[in-house]
Length: 153
Image (cartoon, rainbow, N blue to C red; front, side, top):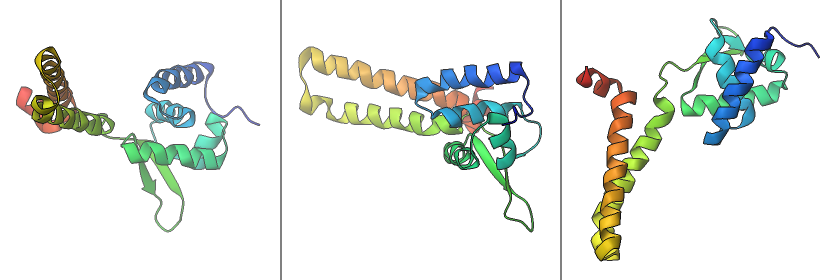
């Protein structure tokens, strides 16, 4: 099998970034594709991805779908054909929006129910936890939401 069009340094970058992304439970091929798309100046086909990452076309397709579902990649069609191309997502904050929303829901749940499920030190601890989750949500949203970034500027 051909070694594709990547330099050794590009391969190291892709593998090192994939190693870091594994801490967020991103599948290996999706993590490698994420790094690959960050380096590409033009849209790439599944054939390009498979060749350069040395994976099967079906694995390339699966990885691309994972990234697309989370907003890390965007699919582009070619008019008049079934061929698809992929590019890096336009909004690096897209994958983090669900996590920020979850933090807010956790803060709301804990705040609303702490009095009915805990007393004393446990209730105080839960209040602190709710405050932590809300503060983390606000901090994340200040960075990932375009309207919040403009308000902060």
